[in-house]
Every structure is written in structure tokens, then in C-alpha cells.
Image (cartoon, rainbow, N blue to C red):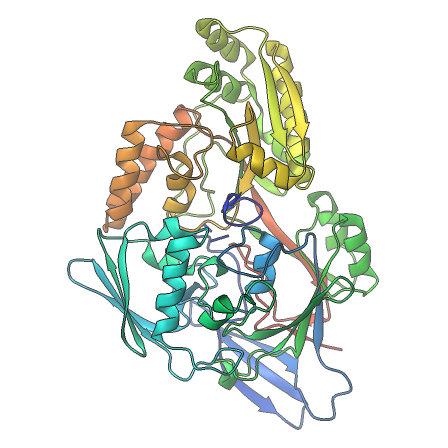
Length: 542
């Protein structure tokens, strides 16, 4: 996903996530007890190792002076609140708290029950049967049933930005009100990730689509219900008293107000002065200073995102692999990561970060800043005095910084980099129309290796804007998609990833950390490795 979150880069999914074992959230609370005398609610969360952590949250009483409303500052404005038709990360920050998916990534990013309480797979791996929770209600009071799953999935397939995730789905059928069968044409070992990665796969209420209100008045089954949206008031959510985890004392907050503050400095000031309680992405250059400030907590975990740039293989000389390799050889990824992320990132020549131990490939064939080797490749290709129009967007300022560093690194080769800085909407249009020599951005929220490679590098796929085509890579990615043995699947992806790196389909740069910050008055929140913003277990304390 690109920083928008999931359309292509159209935010290139740039929404959904790599298996990192870092991020801890509080939305796995299993038991809640209320101590009336002490005036607190004790939320006990069981971890993966069986240990428990107990946090005292203020109890909500009739005598409470004020509602417990968290003010959360976003760096950008949601483009729409329709989860199936947005690619904007700002939208998903809100919608994460309004909608549910059938299953969801847990704290360790493995899949856990959500609207589906259990599931089974047929012996031939072609039918997945999901048993749904009973008694779940949408925010408009209507009961959630199997037909809602069928409608949502069919809408995603027909018109959603993530229909490609259901490429192997033959049909979605309501067996009864609380059972859904998903029938496949081929085995899909990553189906759970496909239906759970992020709220672009949310289960929506059919009536809100039919009456056209879904984009402005979303109705989900999640912990918070939508109240209003306005330029002055931001986006206001209130606690859903009918939430299916209400018996666990969730959510704890009475509400959330999302406000949009595009300027990073203004956003930091609002946190410092108490105008807001929580902010999204902290500028990397401010992390160390902010971490030492009293009254502020900085959450930082290894993320599943990756930053990269790609050369247009539909334009010469970038259709020559020697030219692409020359550029990949000449750059210094560590310098780029330091300039753009101030140490809050790890240079990487592949997509999947080392924190994702299940799928990471330790492969780095390009010697850093090898100008002599790069020149030899250009000479062999007969290319000199090369000029590159580099498409970036100040809406994501790290892309501008990265392009500036790359321009300096390529200058010794006689390569001129012309930085084309446009707004993100224009960026998307130019990328989609192939109007670039090179484009740069990031994919966010990846979990399964299919998220990292298939749409971006398989011939003719929707996110393959660079025009890459390698039949051997196609065959490996196709085979890995249906391989049910994890070790065999890993081997297939390792082969494909090495070929993608060798062919410089993408020139990978680094994996950034995920960084949020919040007031010490905020409890029960943790920065997650999948970039999901979950406030279900969050509370405010005096």
C-alpha cells in the first residue's frame, strides 16, 4: 500500500502488513473486573506467552464530570469513509475503529477471530467455512448476519479497490444466517490475511451502500460509531454500547475526535500543549527529542512497510536491466535512510524486513555506492549522459529528501536527476498513466509475502506500473499463491524475490519504523507493526 493505504499506490497498498512480532495492543483483553471502591476498571490482557499485564483504567461512573474523549491528530484528511473505495491511510485510521473484518491481525499479526468466531478448511483446501458470531449489531441497530458478509465481499470483488485479493474466490455463499462458505478455484493459503489485513476488507451494512450514505456516515459493527464530520470539529466517534466485546469492558473511551493537522510542527505543538492527546507519524528527526520530554510517550516498533523507487521499463534505456542495475549499484541505501528517516529505518535491498522472520530473505547483491561497477554497467549498455525525471510528492516529504540524496549519488555517473514534485493526486494520475522515468513511494501494512510481491511484479497486474515482466517470476508467484506447505512456499518466494532484486523491478531502499506519540494521560494504546490505529482498549487517566 502506498502511504495512502491500499489502492495501488493508489496508495499502493500501500493498508494490510508483514508478520512482525513486535506491536503490542490492548485489544486482546480477555477479562475485565470493576473495583467500585477503588474507582477503577482493571483490564487484564493475556499475552501470547500466557503472561498477563494489568492496567488500571478509570471507571466510567454517572458522577464522572466529563466524557472520556480522546483527541487524535492526523497528518492528512480522509478522502472518503467508504472502506471499500478508499486508499487513504488517514481514512483507515478512522475506519479501523468503526468497522470489523471477519478475522483480524492480533498483536503478533497472526490472524485471530473477529466477526467470525471460528473457521474450517475442506480437505481439498477449496472451501473455507466461517462460523459467525451471533448477536452482533450494526451501529444502526440491525443484526449482523451472513448476508452482510456475502454482500460486502461481492462488492469488494465487483468494485472495491481490493478485489484482486479475491482472485481465487469462485463464490461466497450464506449457508445460513451465521455460516458463510468461501469457495475457491485454487488453494489460497493467505486467504485469512486477504480478508483481515485492514479495514478495506470491512463488513459493511448493505443499506448504507444502497442509500449512498456509506461515504459520509459509515455504519459498522466496531467499537465506535460515527457521529459527525466537519471542518471545525473534525471526525467525531462515540462508544458503541452494543459492541460485541462490551462484556469485556470494551471500548473504554466514551469517544474519539479525529482532527486533521497537516503541518508536522503544528501537530507536535498541539501534543505538547495538551490540545491533542495522540498524534500519528512522528517526524523521525523529532523522535529522540520527543522521547525525552516529560509527559509524552513515543511508541516505536519495526514496521512492515518498505520504501523504494522504480524505473519505467516501457521507456528506454530503463528497459535495459544493465541500466537499472547500474542505478541500484550506485546508490547508498544507508545514507538515504539516514537522510529521510534519521535512523528510524533499516536499509534493505529486498522488500520484507528482517523483523518478519517468517518471510524475510537476507539477500543484498548490490555493493553500496559502487560507482566503478555502476559505470561499467552503463558502458556495457552504451548509455551516457542519462537524464531521469524522478516523480515524487511533497505530500510525503521523505520522497523529496530521498530523491535529492539519490540525485547527488548518481551525479558522479553523469546522470542528471530532475525532481518532479507534484501533489499526491497528480502523482497517482501520472503513475497510473506511465508519465514518469522513475517514481518513488512506499507500500505500507503488508503481512503475507503475496502482499509484497504479486500485484507489484507479476506481469500485467494492477500495481505493476513500472512494466516489469519475467515469466519465471510469474510462475514462482503463481505457484507460491497456492502452495499450502509453509516451507515450500517460503522457498518459492525466496527465488522470486531474488529475481525481482536482480532485475531491479523495484530498487528497494529501507524499512521504516512505525512511530506514534501520545500524552502520558493515554493508557492502553500501543503502536502496531501493521500501522493499524486501534483505540478499542485505550483510556484516559487524570
